[in-house]
Image (tube, rainbow, N blue to C red; front, top):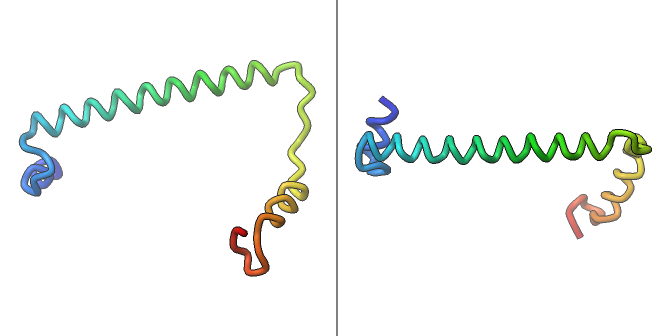
Length: 75
């Protein structure tokens, strides 16, 4: 029903067009997922053995607060 609705709305010309676009998007998502996974592994590798410190949440909040005006909106 979903595919037929997309075709009826004119968004796609045929079932084949819909599924080709779906496959293209899926391939793109797979590639982005692989890139992200690789980046995460790279960062984990870089962090191994380094002297990592926990985030200072209060310092982060203070820094962000300096970027806001009195009403809480960005300056």
